[in-house]
Image (cartoon, rainbow, N blue to C red; front, side, top):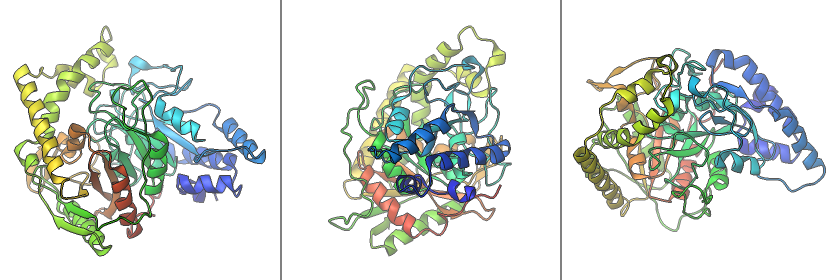
Length: 469
């Protein structure tokens, strides 16, 4: 029964707890048991949160007493270890922060708790949340539950691996350029990077460059993303980027007033893409067409004129490097891992290059604005290849040699522009690895992409597949 429990989504678990078909204690214990069995292989969990079983017992008592409960009442959740959790270790993947226990929860954690969720554990990440693999000197390397020789991605790789492996039904990750959508793609789960500012970043480090950072839900169903987002969205009076109203329509099951228009593309403008990945995007496009949506191949000229990954690199180094320098000041080189050393060693962006990159970012935003005059959704790949082996620095993709940063080619435009995007599985590689697609909406149009994602999920043949460990 425990294995059955650990692969139910959060919405179903909440329903079973609310109707008292399952107790919160049973659900939390099942996930703790799963962690004990599976995590030695995967290494996704950094710290177990004290008091999860006691909180579950209290949740069960509240139901017996007929108290009003939230939509995630009694359901365990996990959070990436860059997200502050009150009195629970938050060590940011670095010996520099070893033993650090925040006094307060990040706003996103607090909101999931207010919805009734129970913090179960913290999950692994790269040093300072900064790389596309989750590996650091403090808690080591996380493995992909579909193939332990491969990465679950970064920077929210521990979170993606934990959810994919049944150690958590739902959780929180952060995204600077790829970091909730890429890991979701590498492990075959779902994730949402909302419009920039929709979910406050209060209590999450690093904050620089603030205009690119996002926090978002990761789960195993689109309805879980919608439920989590409904609890997470809205300003908190602390994060000045978070100003848009909380209210939104999840869109799942609603009937649109007109035929929705979807464009699909895998480039140009994203870098090279593997043939299997391209085929998955086309399959998703055809599926949406079969569901009655208007679907056609498109291009966005602005992405061809200005390569978003290059624009991002010129902007974020200038803004993020000082945060790294401040955090590592006076520390031994032995306490620094690959990415802190790499970031600190990068040359500063010249002011002229920085200004040029700012103008390029504006052109990219304008290009998307023009696109969304005529379309409701953009369908793309998430990653140009399925999950790769650990430690690979260069890839040959569609006959072109590229470095590992090119894995961000289709995800980073949404960080440069602040657009919302969903990562969801729709295919499988010949080697048995998940392949996800990305659904992009216009600014504040999370309801639209959640709706279209739910339609795509309804015809997916891979949504209930789970790794065997």
